[in-house]
Length: 143
Image (cartoon, rainbow, N blue to C red):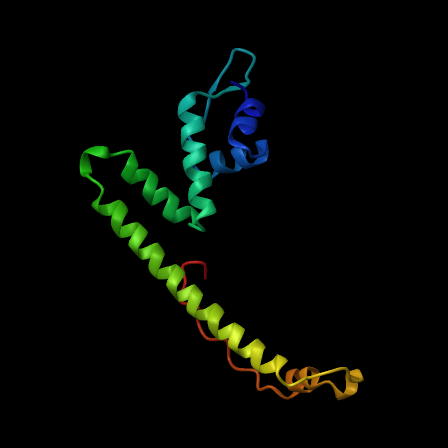
């Protein structure tokens, strides 16, 4: 099948497919005599796998690691379990960071009740007066 057909089956764009090939997540397709890419059911399966991993917010490095593990099925799934456990820990950290962000925003929102002129808005004053903390290092895999 051609790249457009693969994109349609996988519900993505041809640019996405080319990007994943460039990133070496998706193996390059064979070429026809007319130099068109020719994809197989293996490409469909791999592309769906990659897209599902991305939907779970996995990084390209995590996906690469998973693909290496799935390409060696004789090794068992211990490495896969460890990778997913590590990703769950990243998600937990991100949830904590988002909860802290929500608490800060809620505190800020509580500084203004009702309608005021902008110069009397508690949120604006809070944003102006708030100490800008040194950004703390993020402990997620996203950087």
